[in-house]
Image (cartoon, rainbow, N blue to C red):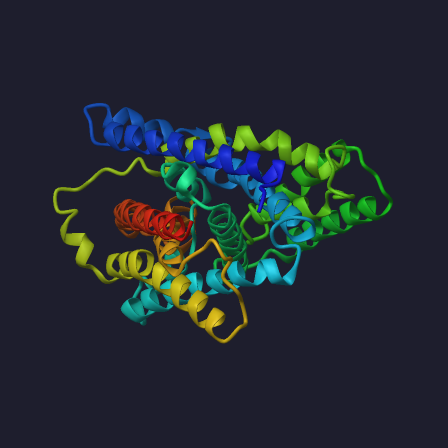
Length: 386
């Protein structure tokens, strides 16, 4: 199985972004707990046009991130790794397990408590971090595993988008929402009229984002809608969708996501932060990411292949699926993003960020170890047969 050029470009940009994200996270945590703590936190709280810088990052820059996610998803569905039922079914089923089981575990710990709304936090997978860890294994990683994990993470992002739209929407300002949807409808008409110039779509996207921002639905949803309004054509290098997607890869990977990491991992560790790890919300997030993710992904993959609903690629073992499941437990960007939507209480937000970081580090470490062993075992077994 060969990787397409665009998928290979996506894989390498995402894994490099993950390494940058790791560095930004460390820098942010150090600064937030250093003698420059006050200045660093004040910087992200600096207000521009009645909103803090961190708010502009989360509601503005992240809309561009979701635009890229939408473009990636559109490509995968039309001509990529999710374009046929046979290719798509395994990562789709695995992603469902990887979302339902973690959410169920968090809900079990927090049902009827003020932190019940955090059930969506452990559902998401951070594509950049997961692929960065996978890249550390080098050429021993089979192509099918790269495709499986990438498709799984993309579907996870789609799940996160739906969760945000359905469960983390407050009271609706219907006039603003209808205007935003009206702009979306106009962009779809331009698409059908075969207008290929990007400018009207980008201008319309900004207008749609503005009204979505004031509608009660999170503004990042505008990025996803814009992605599906932009003409895809046949998906070649001259298509409007490809041009924008290719342009956005590096700015998102090496600017937007690192800035998001800097803004949202500026967590000051209180003296008793270890005690907060045993609170219901923390336990729900940790068990969801570190146990629920690999458990859901592995069980759903195994059972679906057992009943012949899906089929594991010949070069992929269940040991590698389990290892990939742990990499799916690296929530980071998306988990932190959902945290900001789920809670208003600073204590819950800070507590959640800390446990997300710890859970993601542990899940990534265990996933790396298991995949390293599984890939070696697979290579040894293949060598013994030759």
